[in-house]
Image 1 (cartoon, rainbow, N blue to C red):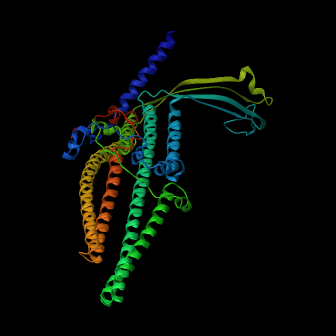
Image 2: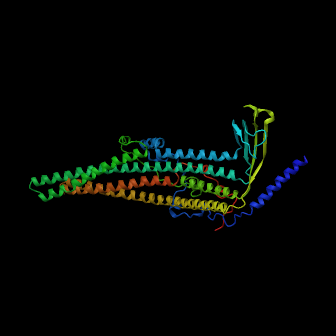
Image 3: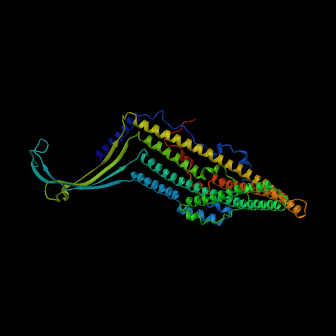
Length: 499
């Protein structure tokens, strides 16, 4: 009992001495310098403050606000077949597998080995002239070994947590890719809707221009017009036909784009029918903006997980300055000589057990360099996160400004269309009463067409701005539970320098 106590005290003493020696390798002067922003630190502008603040966060299938079943089905299918999302999913599985491999270092490691060898022993100063000299015998071994890192300084634990954080980052980045795909499909679909509306107006304008040409030709035939008037009437027709052809080309290209976004061939896009988009009431903002934004936007969440992973990287690098203690043990059999299975006799049994301590004493600055690299990596991750947060609030403000302007422009465009329609109706009534010629009616109709084109462009801007605002708010793909806690954003063993 006394001898066991002595051995225990000797081990503890050795461990303390090794720790003191390790302290000679100083980490002084190496520490992260950046501090991550909190959302509350960023001032919001009048656009955000003036917005209605009683709306909820976007739902996961946010595009259903457009009320178009074809769009709903197209995005649902794209989420299943898109190669970009398949790649993002593979990256998640890769990160999870890597995390599992890293976590394995925290568990006991057990290995078995066995060798069966015929060995001819030479006669020399090491082996002979003993019994084995110039003989050939079996030299067999079998053993099971165990090793377990005691991880006093948390190196393996921090490394595992870093790997898990990177897996979480990969999952958030997959949500970024999904939200980008959804928004790209909605934007392309809005553009397709605008192109169809422009095509309708283009055909109406062509019909009107051909009617004007026919009228000029009738007047010339009746002796009331001139060749110049007929020539003038012909001028806009080729250009209008060109515009119609260009719009038909644009529609075909938009269908191809939508098919490609969904991971399908052009033939799938050809089956798309004309969009039927509509919007309800104007959206407001969630009451917890901007505080909850930290856990609602996939890119912000991904940046937070990257910071958390970098923080654990600093902890791993710092733990390298301290002794590493492993518990080693093995049991087995070995025998030199005798029969093939001689080594399985009880007399051939052997075992080893005990701690193995390694510590750095002098490494030419390698550990300080690794800690400096990890600290700089943490600072870069924090700076990227801060920038992402700034851009997120800017995006929300930008889309609110755009949406408010688009709503106002839509109101004005509707007034312009109504005024142009009234002018056209008055011109038609004047013509019917014999107070004016038909050219004035056609000119009034041309003005109506131009105002309708403007109105359709403004409406497309409204539709796109609504989508962009929802995307800026995160698209409902992640929740607060998916974001790391604030305590995980700083290294556990290193105090971040005050700015």
